[in-house]
Length: 383
Image (tube, rainbow, N blue to C red; front, side, top):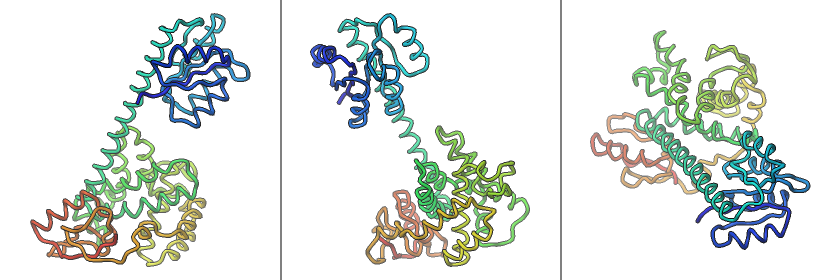
C-alpha cells in the first residue's frame, strides 16, 4: 500500500478542493490547521508527504513543518506559499525543513506531480534506511554467531552480560537501551584475536607473561577497533572501549577522563562486568554488591544503585522456562532452550558452557561435533 499524504490548510474550501482534485490519485487525510495536523500525525502511521499552506493563524506553515519534522523525520514536507512569502520559504528549504515549495495559485497537475515526487523521495529514504538497518542487524548477528562458534566461553560471558546491562539501563530510564545491549553482546569479540591457549590460562587463573597480560588488558580496545567502522556503531565502540575504565579516572584506557566524562555505556558495562566477576568468585550476588560498594571510587554511584535494584527483579531468562530441566541430545535440543550444565565432547573439551541459550548456529556446531568427535549425551536443558 502506498504511503498516505497529509494536506494541511486553515481554509475548509481549499481542503474540499484538494479532496475533489486528488482523491483518485492519492490516499490522503486533511487537517484544518497545524494543531489538527499534529494530532493526525500522532494518531496515524507516518505520512509519506505533508503539504502545508504557509499562512495559517496560530501556527504558520514553517512552525508546523518544523514540528512535523520532529515527529516524523522521514516524511517529505512541501509548502504552498504566496509571492510575499518566498524569501521565508527559501530560508526554510535551506534549513532542511522543506523538500520543496509551490507558489499559489498552484494548478492541479503541478500539485499532483509534486506529491508524486515527494512520495518517491519518501520511499527512497525509507528503503535506504531499511537496507542499512537490515544489513547492520545481519552483520551483528553474524559477529555474535562467529563468537559463539569460535569461543563459546566468551559468547556465554556476553550472554550473561547483556541482560544485566540492559536491566541496569532500564532502571536508569534510558530512552534507548540498544547501545548497551549491543555493546554487551560484542564486548568479547576481541577474544577471537588472542590464541586460545592464552585465553584458557587467563580464565583458569594461570601464570601469564607480561606480553600476554598487556594483550588481555587491551581486549576492550581490540573489540572496539573491530567494530568501530561499522555504520552507526561509533557509540557502541566507545562503550566497549571504556568498559574497564574506573569512575575516578584510573584504569584502561589511558585517557584522561573521569566520572561523567566517561561514556555512559562504558560506565554501565564496567559495573555489570565487575559484578559478574565478583559474583562468580564470591558465589553470592549480595556479597559481590557489598564489595563493589566498598570500592565505590571505581563505579558511578547512580549505576551501583541501579544494579542493586536489578537484583530485586526476577531472572527473566529462567522465569520464562517454567518446566523442570529435562534431557536432550544434539538431535532434540531446540533454539531458545538453555543448557543447564553445558555440553562437552567425549574427551572433555567444552563445546558450550552452562546457561548458554541455544540459537540456530549452536545447533549446527553441536551436530558437527557429535558426528565428528562425539558428545557427552544426553545433557540437561531448560525450556
